[in-house]
Image (cartoon, rainbow over all chains, first blue to last red; front, top):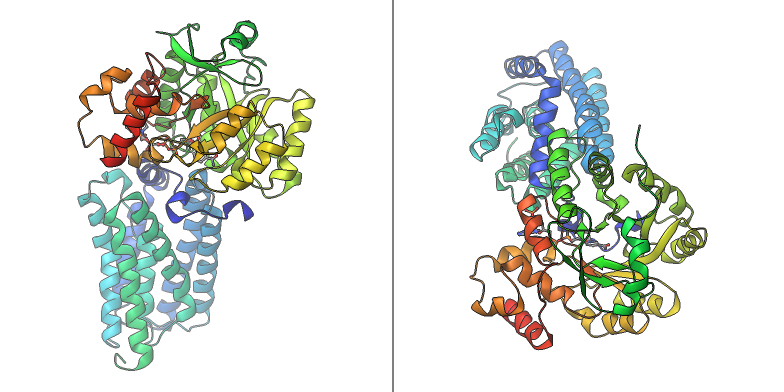
Length: 223
Length: 310
Ligand SMILES: NC(=O)c1ccc[n+]([C@@H]2O[C@H](COP(=O)([O-])OP(=O)(O)OC[C@H]3O[C@@H](n4cnc5c(N)ncnc54)[C@H](OP(=O)(O)O)[C@@H]3O)[C@@H](O)[C@H]2O)c1
């Protein structure tokens, strides 16, 4: 890592916004018609989390974990690594998160429900934002439809949606499961900032909202 | 299968003799060139090089995207058509070396190519294998210039590169820095090691190198490549919000890119500047700075003051 000494944040951005956004266009081309599957699964998750029993919660966490593993390989290793030297590290983070979700889901520690507390309400909002708001913000900011970033396929909305789901889980915090999504929102927000793509600022904002909600729940007032 | 580019640059052998005598800027025609470009000799050998080269940081890192690879190939084509020679890259630049290799192969390895890349690894032992990988990616048999990137593990790498030069595996050895970093170390290396090239940041506002590095380079016959001529784009973006001063024509500048680049390459110790671009039109503008007259000392001061005050 000695090669990187003395670099500033903006020095680390090694591609143009055009290249970054084209990655999603090519990635979407590769995963199509996976979008239909992703969208159906997102609806199933949303409806299922209304009040999921232990069995359904296990499935939701397992599928979510598999999605993180898929993104680690399909997006980070196959596409992002072509233009960003740090992408294999991101892939490792996403793979770790995938495994953590599978394990936590399998052990029955996650139980999703809409109306546990106020924090769960924030969770639903984040989940909806990740599935609908985030892709639309990109489109309104001038991104091509082909490059749309969808929940369960692209890293940013998946991280936001995962934070939402975690806030909806069992009325208690799952800090260990939140670390990677929070970190990713920070990294991705910084990337958007340096690229001057301010439409991406919803990503760190979502992380701040999630973090504040978890803190509020931990400290008592939002229980 | 990859085609391996011819070993030597066509221009090199023919130019060697007469260029030594010139010792300054000259104009010359190359094959396929639309017009003459100004060249300057590499101090150690007299080999003339076009005063405008090309960088590849960010701009050529497009991965395997076929659309963008073809677009960058057009930028390369324009570069060579207009007399460009020096291309600078590095293993640090992601897929840039692979994209260059793609473009060079498509263009049939233009004989004027002066291939310059870097060694960038904190492990001294990995130097040779990294160069071998760069050669594979570019598709060239050997590099014209190998530079130690940002002084990383420079002792070990310089040793390797000088050995490679002895073996005929590279023609010139250099060392780079940027953003005004580690000039003291660079100066010490320039005094203690027989480097052929140094690469530093130099433009109308970043002028630190004028005080010590450039005079030292002239004194020790070291060629100088100016990187970040547009401050990574922020300088050209800033000046282009203003009209070009009417006296720009007096120093042979038709537009802002020429105004900024001619300031750089008119310094007697600078061999060439290496602006990076993703756009054919910008490449045309940049290569324009390799043609026509250059500002003298007084005009250079005027340019710098004008740009600084914008
Ligand atoms: N330590 C080192 O060894 C080191 C450090 C820094 C740089 N370098 C080398 O130096 C090269 C140049 O530096 P750099 O790439 O950092 O920055 P630069 O050449 O100063 O600026 C590049 C930017 O200028 C814009 N540009 C280029 N020509 C233009 C024109 N005619 N009109 C308007 N905009 C124009 C480009 O945008 P468009 O794509 O839109 O044209 C690009 O964003 C690098 O590519 C690299 O090879 C080496």
